[in-house]
Length: 451
Ligand code: FES
Ligand SMILES: [Fe+2]
Image 1 (spheres, helix red, strand yellow):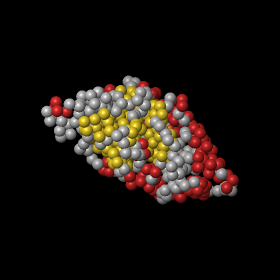
Image 2 (cartoon, protein in one colour):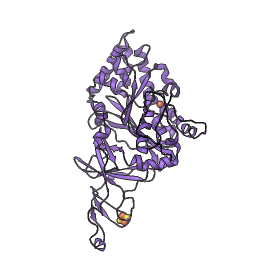
Image 3 (tube, helix red, strand yellow):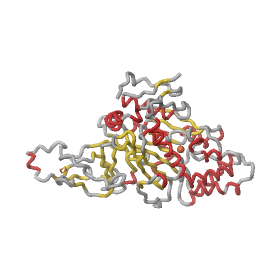
Image 4 (tube, helix red, strand yellow):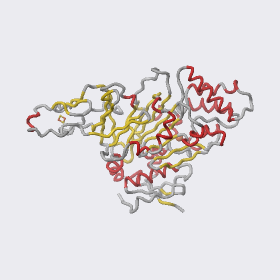
C-alpha cells in the first residue's frame, strides 16, 4: 500500500476533492484497516436492551477480532476479547448463519480443555492448574479486556487500550443527539446481509441525498428537497435546507410540496410501504387525516405544525411521549449523523433508522451490512426482534434501489479508467470527510484538493 507523505493536512472539504479508489478496492489497504483503523476506533457493538439481565451476553465481530459483551450487574457491562487465553479457541461460537452469538450464562467454559471464566472474564478454573507451576497469575488466565462505553442506548467498544475516551471520540454528537432520547427507542426491525462491495461503498450509499432524485425517482413527486452534508471533526451529518419558519423541514418529519395536506399524506404512505422506515404508523395516519382536518390553501408551515402536533397527541394518548426538540436544534442537527467510521444514526423525535457496515474478513470486495429501524413504544410493548439475514429482494423496495448501485460501484472503481471519486462538495461532503479522517488513521488516501 502506497504511503502518502502528508496525512495531517486535510484539504478544504467545502471545495472539490478527489478521493483515490485504493481505500475501496485494495486488498492491502483492507488488511491494513484491521490494525490501523478497526483496532483504534470506538465501534457500536449492540444495544443495551440486547442484554437486559445479569448474565446476558452478545458477541460482536470486527474482521478477525471478536468481542464478548456481558451484562455483569444491574449497572455494569463488561467487554473482553472472545478468545480463550489457553490455546486460542474462540470462546463463544456464533451459531451457523447467525449475525452474532447471544444468550444467557452464569459464566463461560471453553469447549476445548475446560478453562472457565466468570461473567466479567476473569478465570475461575483451570483443570490441572498446578501443572503451570504457579505461572497463571497476573491475569494470564483471564480473557483480555476490551474497553466498553455506553451512549445513546448503544454499547460501544474500543480494542485500543490506550485510546481516547468514548466521550472525547464522539465529540459534538451527544450534544446534538441527546435531545432525541435515542436510548428510549426500541427496534421495530433489524436486518443484515453480506454485500459484494467494500463497507465504505455501502455506508456512502446512505450519507448523502444527492442520489435520491435519480436512484429513488418516485420521491420526486413529493417535491425536490435540497440536501446538505457537513463535516464535524471525525464525524459528519446531513440534512435538508429549510426556510426560517420551516425549520422542522431540515429534519426527517417533513411535509411535501404542492398542496402539503395531500402530498404529505402521499409521501408518508409511500414511505411506510416502500421504505418501512423514517416514519411511524401514528404519523402516517395523522398525515392521512390532514385533508379532512385542514382547509384547502393551508400554508405548508401550518400543515407541518398541525401534522406533528396531531401525531404527538395521538402517541401521547397511548403512552408514547416524544421528547421536545426545538426547531432551531432540528435545523442544526439535520436528518442523520455519520459516526466515524461505519455507523449512521438517522434521528427523529419518534423514530430512527441506523445503518452499519463492517468488512467481511479482509476481503475489500465484501461487507456485512445491517439496518435497524427503531421507534418509541408504550412501556413493555416493544416487539422482540432478532437480527434477520435478509436476501436483497426481501428488503423494502426503496432500499433495494440503493443496493442496486453497490456492486456496480465496487466493480466500476476497479476500472483503469476510473480516476477517483469526485463527491459533490455541498451534498456529499460526508464522503470526503470519511476519507479525510480515514487517511489520518491509515496514513494513506488523503483526498486531493481540486481546482
Ligand atoms: S483452548 Fe480453551 S481451554 Fe484450551
Ligand atoms: Fe437511497
